[in-house]
Length: 208
Image (cartoon, rainbow, N blue to C red):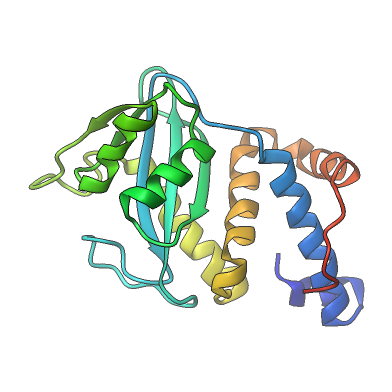
């Protein structure tokens, strides 16, 4: 939810509502920090949240163009997604992928990507890289779950927050993934979040 809606519900000022939300998001991040996607089927793609997707011809709204790596682990039959991770990156270079991919996916895992040349670095850093040639194929021929989640993340940020700053985009993507990864336990989401908050470290820096 947005700080504005929480402000109205709790009848506090905006600064106090933002203070609470930032600490809740921090607890979400800390809960998932050590999790890595793993298994025999993982996918990695990129998007520009609030900007134009590379090669997809779609413009978003709200944030300035921020490149984001999006990873998904799939079931054994590649049919249904299990878990997702998202992380803003400085750019889509091999160096950025080399630094970020191990934060999202366990070393040694199989990782499918499109043919973007920078993804070839995955073979050099402990992954089994499987590039998929996308030219001439429908958009949903491969990575349809990633494309769906990217679209939903954009709608979440635009519809709920009407755009966020580049500085804090990662926090909002972490919240989105936290909720998405616990979609099978929706009835337990509140209690799981309370547990995460109780075990979280303090967030420095005032209301930010």
